Length: 150
Image (cartoon, rainbow, N blue to C red; front, side, top):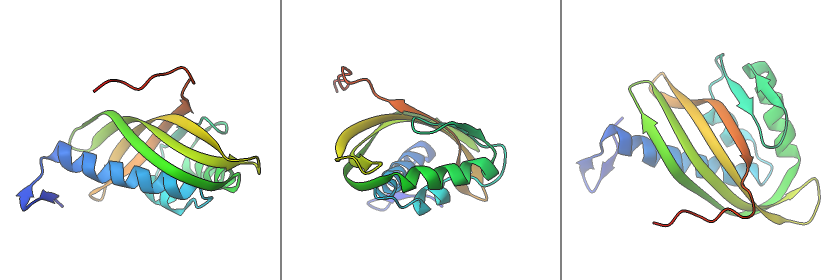
């Protein structure tokens, strides 16, 4: 389904960016509140899928990923001030990738809320016309990293 802006049809690359940035923000905003459902909906449930997580171990296969996502969500609460910044991306007919930074305030394991920045790289596969995440690599952004100018 093609997106539009003011009645004009978006190019496939712009359509992908618009869809993914919204879904990524929604998924992260829910996750830092302990709600895993939007994240589960973003992901392919069809193997191969893989996760190299900032919080948690490396996992492969949906049977390993789903319980990992639930476990991570159970550690998070009181999330707020969520921002997702798309840094770079590309898309072809059925495969795409994104690199971005999720910034938020969250309580982890009952500790006082603190600001965090997680770098996220995702690979996507188109399944039945919908973009689904098939791989995530995430890590904590170094504290001394200054945002790019521009």
